[in-house]
Length: 303
Image (cartoon, rainbow, N blue to C red; front, side, top):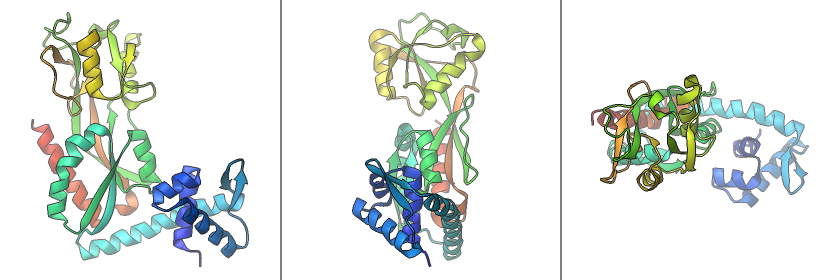
């Protein structure tokens, strides 16, 4: 019978593309990854990988085995989740991914509650952008994730994943207090045409959302400064007068000479989701994680 560890290694290599990345994902050494692949090839009597330049890639048989193996691993995970659900107690280890402000504002406050509710469950985390987190959950590299999408720029999930909305996070326009729009109770999207912005890098979810704000106005945001972290965007606003689109969960403490003006449309917001593989829906660990994330998100909504 094919060894499950070797099969999981092959599937991970197929998704990640390199021995080093596969080793990092599975917690193995590169030598251990190579050993598992060689063991699988010996058992099958034919190679599942081949050298390509300085790396390796899957042979046609390796790709076929990986495709079918991914479904087998999915089914096994579902069986394990159902078996654990019968015991009722969350135990073991889960890895939860999240975007930076989601980790700080939601996951970190939930950890003490998770420790109290499930003392035999160990929770670790990774940080990345929503697109990458979806890929990581889908590939089995992490067990669940906090992601977000903007209402005007929805993320698409693979059919193997499911999710639930736990919070709606409105965004404001951060600007200097002496900006000509700063005295407004609200600003419209039309008010923002021609204004200088600082934004997350091109291709990031937040940048796509900023661009989407202007699409039906026949315009584009005038982005002259770029920064990933909201703290840095606020500093750009304070120092050079750039506007920044900053969600409330991600907003740091504002200096006295900077303010946040709400947008007039409450639908301009991002939805925060917990996402996990369908095969883990019955897992007690996922169930307790979902409950605690919902509780923390509910407290955030009441602020």
